[in-house]
Length: 223
Image (cartoon, rainbow, N blue to C red):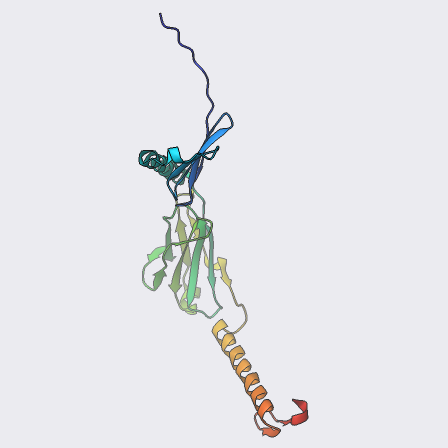
């Protein structure tokens, strides 16, 4: 007759999914061993790593880490933050922007009076954010008259949402309200900078000159 003895063992595991910088740490009774994906090496807490650099051990560790990361990526769902805006009130471009969402797949569409719009729509690529989430934008080109005459909406669909996000005309933000387009403002500022440089150059090389366009006299003692 055989006598079986059962011992309860508690093992803790930690997974950090960060591409080649990811690692897996397994701990038991104040002793741990960590697999580093970048150099494919198991490193015990006592520092004796040489016995765990075997190819089979490395392959198994990498496989386990990738499977765990893939599983948690599938479980992770972060809803997007959505906004719709124009650079200025007379701009023909209306931008619908979604950011901070995970996983990557997302749908951004435009509707006009309840019907899908495909023409005059520029759908951008899905781009990564620094925190591992994603962002995407869709630009609708439409005249001010048409925007006022019809009902336009931006619809955002994502797996993290129980209900799609719908942004209406009243949600549109004007980035530069009541002012000239940003390009014009930048152009004016640049022209003023050049003008100041010209005046400074004249003053540094002329002892006395008349500036007909500035209506002033540049005296040597003033420079």
